[in-house]
Amino acid sequence: MDPRPIRRVKPDRAAPPPSAEQRGRWPLTVPAVAQLVDEGLELPAGALVLVGENGSGKSTVMELLAVTLGLNPEGGSANVRHRTRASEPESLGLVVERSPGASRWGYFLRDETLHGLYSYLEQVGGDRAFHELSHGEAFLEVLTSRAAGKGIYLLDEPDAALSFGGSLALVSHLLALVDRGAQVVVATHSPVVAALPGATLLEVGEWGMRPAVWSELELTESWRQFLGSPRVVPAPPALTGLVSRPRAPAGCGRGPAGRGRRSARPPARRSAPRSAPRTAPP
Image (cartoon, rainbow, N blue to C red):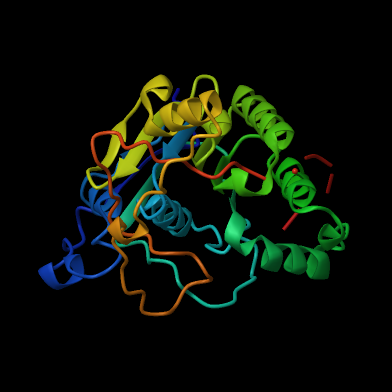
């Protein structure tokens, strides 16, 4: 029997395909999203890691997966009613293929909306005071208390909250989840998180989503070059090369998530991640 809680997210063949007018608007102008809507996405057992430049579409893919799975797109489970301002894509005709009898529990954590989620959890659940913890401590507290067994867990840029030690703690917890039969999907800029043992890697960019190997990632090579000679800092990548998209309702502060820019392997450097763990559901 297939142990995966979610086998795949796929287009609903009974629904009409997106029109030319829809394809000319965000989010279908994002190559990774267009690929997801056209081809679907097989979710492997264990962990799936998405890597890519700012603006490549990783977060938009994560939002679309969360919406399609019925999770709160601002973070939390299907039971979380917290909502500020809708800025995420709709499910775009995608449907979920689940394994019979598999756990339907899931949780979505995205760095940019954690403040609102912490406030909601404090108000409705009598949880500990997340706002009195550091950013990294609070993140790991929510993760370890909500992600404890079988189910599917979506993490959008968890490394933004974590120090190097915190990133190792995250990897350790994700490995424990996978050992218990959970599925994990992570979008990250961290070479530490991207090196999650046994994970399937997809590189996101102007090509859409494609299989990748950790040692060959631009992310890995850029960090390797920088740590080898940290005093030689090249010019940053041209952010104007990242294609922005008009979002009807303005989002919660994330930058453009459109078409990824990439050349043959530019010596671009990324920022380092940011702190560590603690216990407590919605």
